[in-house]
Length: 181
Length: 174
Image 1 (tube, rainbow over the protein chains, first blue to last red):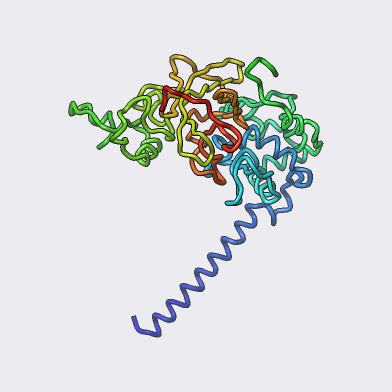
Image 2: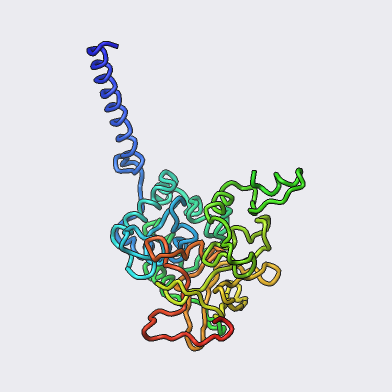
């Protein structure tokens, strides 16, 4: 290949790569929902109590608090984003709440949109079916319909936030060896 | 080939247990060989994820739970004689005691918990409760790896503050 042909080939390669990257960028924007106004999402504002409740039941290090697991959750008692943090000593950070939110709303965006718009039942979502035990779940059944965790998650999804139920989940003491609650 | 089932037709034994599942097999391989100074048995491989091998089909006696208890978060000193209490979601309980290697284990024929489970350690007057339940992991070291970091609370330990708490003497484990 002559020098000029090589230069032309190199320019063409760079152009192709640039076009390809533009295409990828557009796809990423669509995937995270920023550019797709037709999909509804539950509110980010006020999400923190929901994340705290889910962190205790879903986000422990042996479940969704693991790299490589879907619906990856970060926060206190689980995986941390900052290298300076550890699972037991720092409260969940704003960045971790953001990451949790994106992780959850990115699971089934179309189905979640229908739930948020009251066009489908919350049980159409894996994040509700699995902890209810309706669908196979390696972590087992974690809630029953109407309990605090269920009210917390479903309330958030359908725009009827129930922070009291979320807080109840977080504040429930661990069972005691001597037969306490 | 290192897989046990692949060795049977040749009438050979294999040194490494294998599940025939490439993911746990690869994880087991990363644990490395046995310490030549410690015989295979209840004292071997402290701090490693027991259930990788000690599960049904894993090549070793099946345990439902297993782990190693250390003195404090920064110490590599293992502690024997620590009582380990398991409480499961069905309110069933089981207790056992760490051996001199700091190891404890729960054979499946004795107890299989219903998850989630909560663990408590007791050594003399010191009691340490696990901060959150475990939902599926039977190996303490599945989550409790050393050192403390973003993805681990550190190894399992008894004492929060070594300048305040003192472990009871244990003459059986010099």
